[in-house]
Length: 258
Image (cartoon, rainbow, N blue to C red):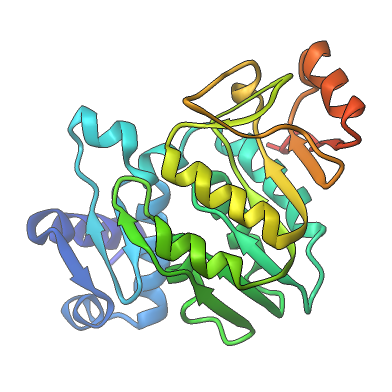
C-alpha cells in the first residue's frame, strides 16, 4: 500500500465515522502508531481533520464553520506564520516559564517548542493536546469555560488562575495592530490576554502583515516597553513610529524559504 493510498483510506474512514482513535486506526490498517500519527499530521496540514490527544475528528466544511474553525484558519498566511514562529521560538530558552495564548500563530510557535525543556502555561486546548505526550515539557492548563470556536479557555476562572502565576515570557496573538496598540475581537479573550501580559516579565506578539491597520472590538493593550512585536513585513510608518515611541521592540522575521 502506498502512502497516498493509506492517507486516502484513513481520510475516508474518518469522514465516514467523524472521529477515530490512534489504536483503532493502527489495528484497522495494520500499521504502527507512529505511522498513524504521521498520517494524521499530514491530513491535519491539509485541513481535512482536527488532531486531538489520542485521535482525530473530521473538520466540518460549511462556510460558517470554516470561518471560525481552528484548522481552517491555520492554513492562512502559513509561510509567514512559520517564519514568525521560528524567530519567536529562538527567543525561548530551556528552563523558562512561558505563557502561550490560543490562536493559530501561537500554535505554530508551540510546534517549534516541543524540543525544549520548559514550563508552559496555556489556555489553548490544541496546544495542551500537542504537549500532552511530550515528557520534556511541564504543561499547566488554565481553568475556565471552553470557547469552542476558538479552542481556548476563557472567563473568570481562567483569569483567576493567571493572577496566581509568574512567567518569563507571554507569547500572544491578535486580530489587528494600529498606532493605538494591539486589538482583538472577543472581550473574554482580551480580558485573558491582559492577565497574561500582567503575569509575564515581557510579552511577544506574533502578528503577520495581514493585521496591519486592522481594528477589532477591543484594544487589548497599547504598546509598552515590555512588548516585542514580531512580524514579517515593516508596518506602516505610523505604526512603526508608535512602537518606537513606546519603547517597544519591532522585529522583522525573514521571508520563509521555498
